[in-house]
Length: 164
Image 1 (tube, rainbow, N blue to C red):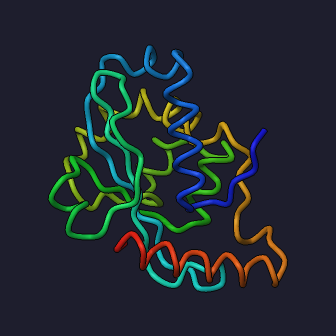
Image 2 (image 1 turned 180 degrees about the vertical axis):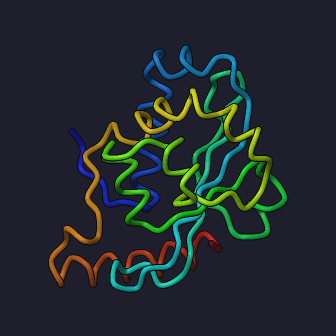
């Protein structure tokens, strides 16, 4: 299994590649068309100095894109924007918590879109999570000081390059 650092272009690229090569994801999401963005709140201790937004567009199960967004683009294009701390996203991606529970408890906040609409997506949450966890994810809190420094530098570089 490929190892990817959390919240990097490599992770999104690998996840998109796996999604597109795995008919199970398209089939599980064939009734879904949406653009959803996820805000990872700043956590300097994790090397995430500013909020970062990534998201995906699915059209009848086809993955159109899985990329990082700047604030303006996310607000203009997304049907939904959900936000949480990186620790909360980690628990969700590690399947230590459930989306609906965390959403209803307010640990995942709805920034854009309707609550009813998000709850309509809830049955697909497990598939989204599975699609994003087909690689072995390495989170910043699991990195050595040197690895974390490299991660922070890499994040600053790709953010500047992508304008996110």
